[in-house]
Structure formats: structure tokens, C-alpha cells
Length: 602
Ligand code: GTP
Ligand code: SPV
Ligand code: MN
View 1 (tube, protein in one colour):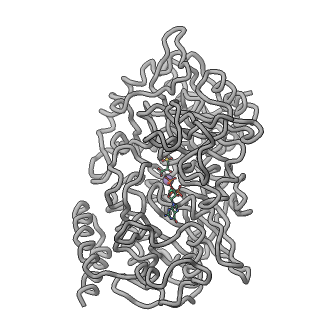
View 2 (cartoon, protein in one colour):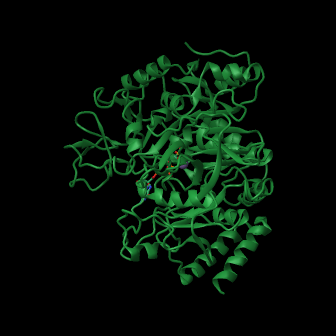
View 3 (cartoon, protein in one colour):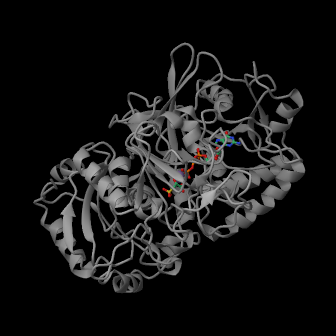
């Protein structure tokens, strides 16, 4: 068991970090099933994991994290570029030398009483020329088993790396050293909020994380490498690293197209990626549910790969009604975090689609009874970690190293008003403008932002862009200049979350979103009926297939309505948003904004 390498620089780095963190031992992960099983057993034996019912949830475990460690911590996330300007106004910046000194003091001796695990992993199919290799050092077995599911781990990665291949060093510690004889005793190890650091050194392409064991803070291949560091690499190399799902959609004639979609955290990517169409004859297949890397093929089209190997999905709200494919994906071999436990050792959460079967143990470990407890049984950001190949809708080509050609890109967010169900950009630059103004009611996916308020989250990348957001906008404009309109994806804006004045959803969402995908498919084929409006192309009244849909004609009208007063207010907030970037807003986007204002006032 274990893996080996001839990579001297990697060995040297592991030694340096071990000298600093002083673990009791070092273990090189081989990514095998036996290794996964061994760590799951260790975690169960130590009381950190609960083994779920082998009959109803075979191979599944449940973790309860610390209350301070339930989501990404955006105000503890740093882009430590050499200059503050390189990080831009939307990122927390620190001087890299100062940050490293601060973190080294914390790393010193932080792994005492623990093992340092070396996790060689590949983002993207191993050996593919678009894949990137990372090596995560961690003192958390929870991280090891999650990385096994979310990435491709093991000896094969070291073989590809060879004696001097390139990798992204990803340093991680939960920040809870153990004294001699001390044990975790079933308590999730982490450091207090003010000692958590999720740090990125973009020029060095290095990640240092300390103090959190949860999700994107600790599974460093995901947001840290595949988005924050990869976005910097993509800028330099002329491609795109995006917070996007990828799906394949086939029409009744058997024609298939691929769609990528960027929605902010907890705004419906996993749901859309796994959607089961309600319209007859249409099929949707999943390629990825969170991250897309897109590069130009020789034919001038953008090809996307999913760099991940698993789903780290939001549990609450996931049911056989809303997302049956996700429910099937998590029937076995799944790691649950912060959901509730039933008496017969199954899982439960708000919105699972049935009442709690008797008394539960909530995510805090307390007894919980439906109707009697005022707090939710599952944390709103409770998650499942499941292998992507367990999804019944996974596309056969999901691991194709060449990627899939993207015909349409969707942007969206939770917008209770103003933004219609769907509209289409009139050009690439207009589409980039739509991406730049994405906004959403804030969700529970991050710890330190106030839920319920609308915040601008351009391209759903606000917490994930590794450099100046104004330059990122310019990068998107440049991408559009590398190909021609007939080959570039068509760009759309969707909003499943528009509400009535009484606060009721106007649109049923989920599988019914296939009706919007159908229009997108048709528009990308040069068909589909549309009318020009001030904000872009809108579907004509009869363009969205509403056969069998339970939405009134008035509600349908409301869903596609553009209210001039609301849009004039919107313009003011877009101007405030753009002002943050000063002269780094590309001229093309200022022109788009001016043209929108002119069209609205016509
Ligand atoms: P991250 O993993 O945080 O990036 O989230 P995500 O974008 O994958 O979001 P996900 O699909 O997990 O959805 C999060 C929440 O949005 C869940 O509670 C869903 O039930 C809800 N949701 C998803 N799609 C729809 C929809 O079409 N309509 C409504 N009303 N809610 C939706
Ligand atoms: C998100 O917050 O967008 C996620 C979850 O996908 S995490 O991996 O924790 O970032
Ligand atoms: Mn996400």
C-alpha cells in the first residue's frame, strides 16, 4: 500500500512541510479502494464518522462538522498576489511574504499527533493533456476520502508526473495538533474562524489552507486549484476555468448539443446538470455539476471538460421530485456531511420529500423532532460527496479528454424580480456583459455573507476568480475575438427564481427547466422564435413549449415581462458595481451598458 515517486522536487517539498508541521508519520496515498476502506474504518472507529445502514445506504458514512466549519469562509480566503492590484477589488489580499510568515507560525507543529497524507491527484482524466496535477498534503482522513471521490488519486498520477513534471502544491492542515495521548474523541478537528486561512499564491501557483476541514476550504482540487489557480493559468494560456455545470441535451430527432451554465453557489447547477426533462422525447445527460474548463479546439469551437470525478452537492432540497438522479447517485458509497441521522441509521434533510421518520439526531448531534424543533435538522449547506459515475444520467463521454463542444452558455442567479425567465444575448460581447452583471440573493454556501440580500456575483465567480475581476472581464472579451460568432457558444441569461408580489415562485423549476433548455437548443440551432427587447432577445409568447405545464398564461407573461422602472433601478446598481473596477472595466462592457440605457430610454 501507498505510492512512491522519483520526483526529487516533490520529495523535497514534502520533507520541508513535514519538518515544519511535525507529523508523527507521513503516508503517500495510492488511491486504491482498499485505502479508501481503511480510512473510512479509521474514521468510524475514532467516532468521527457514523456508519450508515448497510442495507439501505451501503458503503455510506455521515460526518458532523464543527459549527464554525460548515461552509466556505470568504472573508478568510486570500489571493496573495505580489501586488494588491493583481488581486483586484473583489478579493482579500495580503502581501505573500507577510501571509506566509503568519501561516508558517500556525503550521509549525500543527500536525503533531497526526499523520501527514500525501495525495497526488489529477483534475481531469489522468494523462490527458488538459488535466492538471496537484499534490495535497493534509492531516485529515476526511479530506483523503473526499479527495478519492472528487478527484483521481494515486500512483497513476505520480507515474504521469515522472521525475520532474509540474504540479500545484496544495498544503492543508485542520490546525488542531494533538498532545501526547490526546485523541479527537469524535470531535471534528479545526481551528477557530479567525485562525482559518484559505490562501492562494497565484504567481507561484501554490495553495496554503489552514484551520478548516470543510468542502472547498479543504478539498483543494476544487475551488482553490480548479478555479482560483486555474483561472490565472487560463488567463495566461487563453482558455476559461469557470464555475459551470456541463450537460448534454438531445432532441427527439437524436441531435445532441452541449450547454454550460454558471449560477452562483447553491443556485441550481447540480439540479440543472441532472435534470430529467418533462417534455417528451428530450434527454439530458450530465458531464459535470460545478466546474468547467473550456479550451478552443482546432475547429474554433470551445470544448469543455469537467475536471472533477465526483459531486459535492447540496443535500437540503434534494428529493425524488426535485432531483431523482442525485438521489440515485447517493444511494451507496456516499459521504454525507451535516445532514440528520434517523433511528435506523439513514439520512434525512429538509426538502427530502417525506416527513422525518420519527425522532432524529440533527447535524449538531442533538435530538430533533419534526414540528417541535425550531432549527433545521440538516445544516442548510449540508452536502453529499458521491462518485460521478453513480449518476444514472452521466453521459458516456463525460471523461472524454477532448471535452465536449459547447453550443450555449447560460448565466443565472436567484432574482425575485426584474430578470425574466430567459433572454438571449445579441452578441458575444453582450453575453459577456450579461455574465458581468450576474447577481443573486445570497445563499448558505458561504459563511460570512448575509443570506437573503442580492449581491453581484459576476460569472458566479466572485469568490473564485484568482485575479483582478476587471481583467477577467477583459479576458472573456478577448476569448470572443479568438473565434467567430457562428462557432462561439450563444449566451443566455436564465432566472428560475422570479416571485409574485406575495413571494410565491412564478416558475416550477427543476424538470420544467427543460422547456427553457429546449428554446436554448433551438436558438443555438438558428431556430426558435425570439423578439428583440431592450435587454436582448426574448422568447415570443408562443416560443416556450408550455404543453402540459401548470403555469397560467398571466404568470407566463409575468415571467417574461420587462419592467422599465425595475430595469432603471437595476442600471443604477450595475453602475455602482462597475464603479468598483474603475478603468479596468473593458470599453466593450461600458459600451454595452450605455447601449442598454439608451434602449431602455427609447
Ligand atoms: P453549489 O454546489 O453550491 O455550487 O450549488 P449548485 O449551484 O449546484 O446548487 P444546487 O443545484 O445544489 O441547488 C441548490 C438549491 O437550489 C437547492 O435547495 C435546490 O432545491 C434549489 N433549486 C435548484 N434548482 C431550482 C429550480 O429550478 N427552482 C427552484 N425554486 N429551486 C431550485
Ligand atoms: C460552492 O460553494 O460553490 C460549492 C461548495 O460548490 S464548496 O466546494 O464548498 O465550495
Ligand atoms: Mn459550486
